[in-house]
Length: 115
Length: 114
Image (cartoon, rainbow over all chains, first blue to last red; front, side):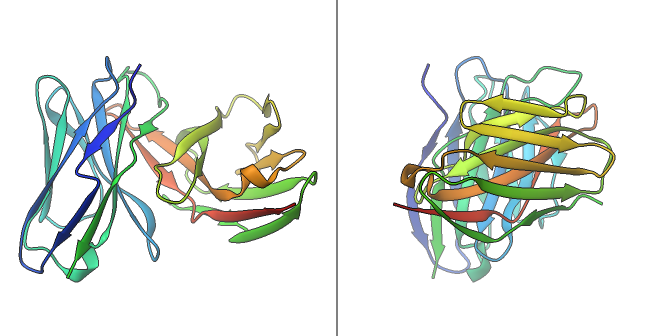
């Protein structure tokens, strides 16, 4: 079974621009979560989507948004980019069962550099 | 209350030795504790995980010890190998009946010397 895939793998943008990152979950997984990884703040939860609905949201400004499509693929968007948005953005998928936490499987990430 | 504290930040171990990484948490609502291994340029990969009703779980050279009363858990890597050199993250998952989210420790950079 193919793993979580993310595109693009690398991205360079300038301040003020916006960016869209894409994630395809493992086949059969309906939950997709996004995380930001930086040297200073570590790994931080952005949001989770299930059945095209945002279920959870981390403590990030409204410039960070996402969506999920009917095939469970997800995109996240960052508007008005700031230098501090430079990070590795990780997508993780899980089956999406109710009733307890479950294993999340991570993709390789998208490395975003904001100049 | 959502924090997970991980120590040490870095660790150097000789080949064949035991690597031990510790984590502590505050929120008793956490119900799943995975460990992830991350190599440079890669995403985190699940190594081993435990639920709070179990005190120990072993998979090959990797063991999680879990102390619910102390709100601590640790990863032991037996017979450490140079190929184990990577960054290790502990995490805790909170299921709030509307989904689940991982809270990560700060990471431990492990170097195994040949």
